[in-house]
Image (cartoon, rainbow, N blue to C red; front, side, top):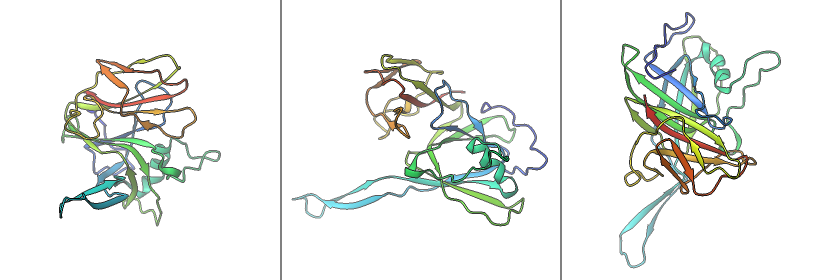
Length: 262
């Protein structure tokens, strides 16, 4: 669904208080596609993210520097929640996991993958009260769903699903929306055609994790790996052409996340 598309009236059994916000996600480890199709999160009541925490923090003093010190922090991790109505939460979890509940397919837990493997790229789209005018979006890359518990599922109470991410959440202003392209390396191809022209979100000089002027990030996932690895060098973009200095190995997924004009 486009960021300016009408969502239509809420279904009769859903109370959608956040009706001017469209939540959708992309599966991190999607099969090769350009672009990867997003999945709308129906019945999403709210989303939020807070301040990051770190795995390691220390003050260090330089020899000969007197009382001057610097702080080293490593392992940034953001966290937050997605909220649904409890009466609707089971269907929403099945929707996010891409399964249909039934006699032969009724296992959707655990949600938390071992070794912090990311599962989703989340895009929260905010619109005006006309349900059409785009105001902006928030993007949470490499979202990992957290542990959950259930109590009595009163329909109109909230079910809160925690998440975490080791990537920086970022904001996009009106007129921009997310694109997720995935390509498969063959061992010889060095250029890949993006499905859209990337917009400039920032510049490499004023955002410390911005690897390129236009791309947010590129990851490579080897055929034997469980998750993609962020690539900080070796790629360049010219228009819709993504080029690597050396061809990705056969079977490697090249995962590209960027913004395009709405």
